[in-house]
Structure formats: structure tokens, C-alpha cells
Amino acid sequence: MAKGHAHRWRVAPGAKAHLGQVDTRTTAGAPGDKAETEAATADLAAELAGLQERLYAEARQSLLVVLQAIDAGGKDGTIRSVFRGLNPASCRVASFKVPSEEERSHDFLWRVHAKTPAAGEVVVFNRSHYEDVLVVRVHELVPEAVWRPRYDLINGFEANLAAAGTRIVKLFLHISKDEQAERFQDRLDDPAKRWKFRKGDLEERARWDDYMAAFEEALSRTSTEAAPWYVVPADRNWYRNWAVSRILVETLQDMDPNYPPAEDLAGVVIT
Ligand code: AMP
Ligand code: MG
Image 1: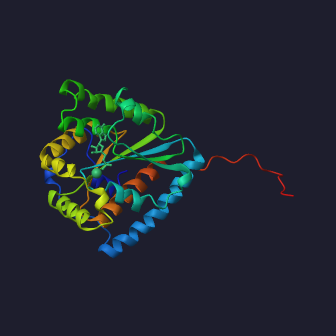
Image 2 (image 1 turned 90 degrees about the vertical axis):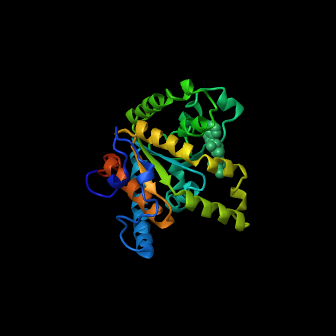
């Protein structure tokens, strides 16, 4: 994937992610202003749908999109905007909340592995196994001796999925602390958005620096050739949607799904 745009946001395997150095409001590389960029995103949506159709028909590879962000980072909005044009027959969203009693009684990858895509499918993880080195680390839900080995366990897990034909694209939607404040305020002010706000969100916000440190280490330790991380500047939704669409289209183009060979249809006549 030398050409294209995705490399702009990619965390090079082995490199350290520096989230503080990223301009979360940037529009770098965008094809134009908001309206022009939205038009380009609409074109990408059509491309995405075509590529998904071929992926489904081919039924050999699959795509796993991992979405992570701080609260109000735009995970739900990205799903709504970028994936709305896909065929629901072969696209699923899996959301990971506070683990249930049963989930907690298994290893941390158990519930996640169960939701990974089958051949031909696109699956979006709204939060993921990364919570087990993010919220779990920030709140010390388990000792460091338990969460620290998880970076390697995650890399092994993702390598296993990759070996089985799953492409993994991991997106960190990066907003600023100021942007989060605006979005929280919006959720408080708008009756249609209030359901998204919990008082606990403010306690998480107070741990902003701890979360950024946890994200930085996760991104640095688990961006691999098989499963790279991308840091998407996400203060502007229209730029975020375009960037995510570009990354997905470029990834699927690189996967190059093809329609399976047709049976030998010589002499077939429809009667
Ligand atoms: P939301 O995405 O706003 O519905 O919130 C889901 C909540 O579940 C977030 O506060 C996450 O931090 C939390 N969560 C997700 N996975 C885990 C996990 N493995 N351990 C603890 N909390 C989690
Ligand atoms: Mg929430």
C-alpha cells in the first residue's frame, strides 16, 4: 500500500505512537473543504460496498475493524456514517461492554474470539480486547503482572486471526480534551443525546492523561504488519469519516477479493 493516504495515519510497526504530537483538528490530505470531502466520502462508500460484495462472494478472507477511542471519540458516529452502505448480510457490529459474570470467568480473549469474522464477513468491533489493557490498566482492575503480558497475548491472537485469512485494521479515533468537553456538553444540552451521558464519564475524563498513556503504549506495542494501528484525527467528523473510509478502501483493495471462478457453464440453457 505505498500509494494512497492510509500510510499518513499508520503507526509503523515497532515505532512509538506520540498522541500528544497529533493535531486532532487537522484536515491534512483531505480532497477539499467539508462539502468536497463529504462528496469524496460518498464515492468511497460506493467503492467500499463493491469491495465488500466481492469479499463476500470470494468467501476466503475476512476483515476485522477495531474501533477504539476515549468517551465521545466518535465510535458510534463512525459506524453509523461509514458502514451504513454495506450489505448487512455479511457485515456485523460487535460492541464490548463491561464484561458479564460469565465473560469474566474466562480468559480476556474468549468473548472477543467468539465475535471475529467468518470468511467473507466484515466485522466492526466497537471497543474490543484492547479495553483489557486500557480501562483495566487505568483502573487497576487486575494487577500489572496480569495486564502487562496481554500485549504479547494480543499480538499472538491477532497473528492467529491473520494466518486464518482475517485482515485486521485498528483505528484509534483521536479527539482533543477540549473537543470531548464540547461533545459532553452537547450530550447534556440535547435531550436526544442525553442518554449517552453518564456521570461516570466525568471521572474517566479526569483520568485523561492516564488513558492517553495507556493508548500510547497499546498502539506502540501492538501495531504489527498483520494488524496495524491507525491514529485518525477525529475532532472534525467529516475528516474522520473520509480518513476511515480511505483506510478501509485501501485495505480492501490490497486484499483484492475476487469473484470465485464460475462453474463450467458451457451449453447451459435457461428454459
Ligand atoms: P459504552 O461504549 O459507552 O457503552 O461503554 C462501555 C463501557 O464498558 C466502557 O466504560 C468501557 O470501558 C467498559 N468496558 C468495555 N470492556 C471492558 C473490560 N474488558 N473491562 C472493563 N470495562 C470494560
Ligand atoms: Mg459511554
